[in-house]
Image 1 (cartoon, rainbow over the protein chains, first blue to last red):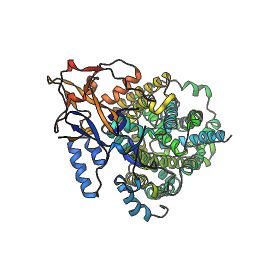
Image 2: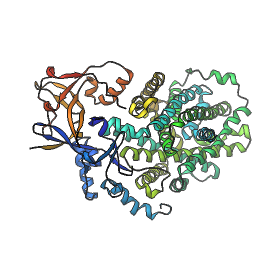
Image 3: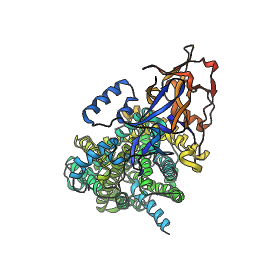
Image 4: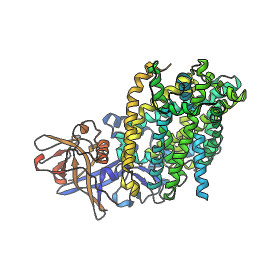
Length: 121
Length: 405
Length: 110
């Protein structure tokens, strides 16, 4: 299992944390182009802006504008290949979903909305 | 023994959950306008749906993943997002139709206008999803949905001739009103092969932790559940043919269909119809709301699960909440519920090819399916369904303009 | 001097060879583990003709493979023959005739 297809096996693949909780999908891959050596995967990226940007430059601008108004730090969320612990249909990485930036919206909704409605806890 | 009980429950809930506003509306209209002639369309749709449901279940069992998750991965975000958005839009309209169905049932019962009921019904829907677990939601309403068996009983009471019914299982084209006939054909098949059905089933298999020991159970539930469920849809058409058609009653409003059980059951028939409509639509509305939340979560990689408390799956819960709220707006707009239903069935048929095509790829992908990939026969069936749905999709749009009444 | 490109934006873009000829769309990047790194071996370009143009190639390629129908072969571009320029389509520095062909069947693993 040393050969990996970046488009088929990595892009759009589900990423899980140490406890197998969902972090998001691989929305982007950063490829480092090196002089005299083959390109290497610099990082995998989880970011909805990156996903929408794949639809074209206009989508990219619109998504970036929305995101800059609403989002905190830590985006785009990137991690190097070395953090991958297990690789199959999903990618398991050495991280904690509870504190990871891709779940900002989850935490915000939980604290601001869901917890305030009875039955939510 | 426990497995057998599980299979029985699965079959029974599939039967009780089969009927929804689309099947009731299209079957009633078809029976009233064309008698038995469209029974073959229900049969055709059911055969297709059995294969698709079995495949959805098998996929989730073997791979541990859902169809939507796999579609995003195999076809990449740009290729996936447009069909996905279209499917969500269709879901929204169908949900509005289902909620509309419950509201109309309440209107028939109380005389109070259906729009007044939109918010209470939506609130009840939301409350159930918010507080209950997956099994309660799925099994509870489906078991109540067994009330729809009253249509089958009515068929016997009205003395339908088995020979005539069997003959109608062969497709024929009527001499007149061809456009309307074709329109109803598309709508009936669209109502039977509802994409939310098998996508929901795929997520349900994960919610219920189905492992490889469920492969046969899945096949039995898909086949028996859908077949017997289809009998109920056919029964609606037969009853309409026997009670409405002779009176020349065309079902253009739900009020016209409401009396179809009276000849068989007396005044009880009216209440049985209301109960059937309300329960079938409520159950379908629950499934649709969940199906949409599943789809969003699985497409974008969120945590999800109806068995989780809402605070453990905040984006998931917010999705179905927003979705229900949006559909309520559509119902409140006062659009004729029957017209909305038929329109949403027609556009379901239009997006069907896009929803079915991925099965050709996913069911043959060994990394997901291992040794359980599709047989050549199953692939042929899926190809046939794709071609059929493509034809339906193409003719649906002009027919919608020409044929609906 | 190295720079980092967003691979997800290059996928699906049309690729030209050294003569300026369109050889198809970039649809796969094959890599290999080397220690803690993932390193690119080569790129797969083209092979589906008309369907490439309509961006249906991904879906169609998979369906076509499933149904077992034959289709035209694509090109394998080694890592040192591909250039990525700022905001431009990827460029192959060799001529199409000098490239290895491949005929589509994805490697089955497991």
